[in-house]
Image (tube, rainbow, N blue to C red; front, side, top):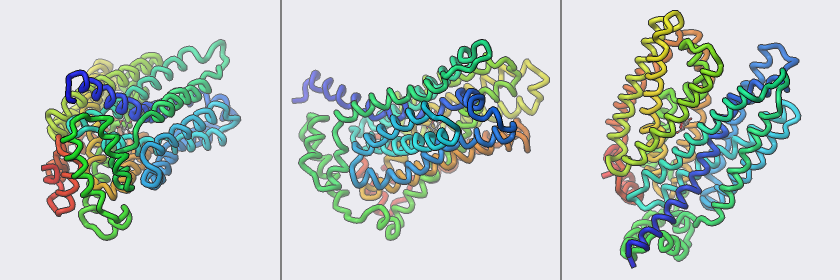
Length: 476
Ligand code: BGC
């Protein structure tokens, strides 16, 4: 029966599922954010005997090992989640997180730490693949956008917690010239949310769409009953999924034989390239450095400034959660690109006006930077994950999401590794102008190729895609 209290119960179940799966995002954010603060202390402990240049290059390995682990993790997770299911794959990622975090914490030297960070990266990669995919397949379509956005919210909370602990570490970890072992605590403590996720996921149902694909119809219907009470709704959902599950080709076979699937893969890859080329991680990884360039010389000021960036990132994500299923994906993206473009161009212009010699330009630059973060967090942050988990046909969804998520990590690594070189070659101002210009150009990509997917079922999107409709129309 569809009484208000049973509806409430359903909402509770849906949000419990959303929250637990989204914990994968928290781990993603924590792991990505934590290293910038811990690095200086790790260098002191492991790399003190090396020349500064050698020490920098070893540190780069320590930082990027996680990103390359994530690339590897997303590549294998397509296979894992297709074979063993979404739920078991999230469980695997939780185990890898625990092992990786503990290994980081007990590292005896830098080589061990690099290996441990690579292992942790595999967990991050597998989780960043599976969680949005699972959320898209299990959510009722009326709240699908906001459920996947919860995953992004958790990423931002993870990054914020990491920034806070970086700040704590910078302030308190060194006493009387002695470096504490606090960095080990910071890296190891991440095992705790991973255990919480593992236990929570044990209570989650498997994705009904995966169950259908593997021929477990009754089990899939039972999952729908657990989440929705309306039998008519369940019957309609089942009818639609049955048609998609009839496709017996796997992702690779679809890729070689079906041009419509290839178009969706191209779209997913394009979207993730765009997400990273907005320039978000330039700010996430180098925020203290940007504060320094903007004239804030005190390390404390830089660290607290970074925390403000983290808080803004969390809060603005709520804008997406509130509006993604009401206004739709595309209007929010347009607003986001205009905001990000304008903000980056402002930062670039202020830098070119000689910010270092003119401290009065520092605050306007930081405000523009925060406006950029708002633009990203309300749009490209969550919504690109949302669209990427909606556009693929069921039979090729694993491969599709694997391709787009791998792209996210590869471009993420490239952006991270080229930022300082770009600043040194074309200057800080021009680097920001470049990113600003790109944000404006991305609007054209959205107008031409990106569908509005609000409020329609994944199967409806699939039928439109496979019938050869233009990509931007597959959401109608
Ligand atoms: C991106 C990450 C980024 C984070 C910032 C995510 O959607 O994929 O690369 O660091 O948002 O909040």
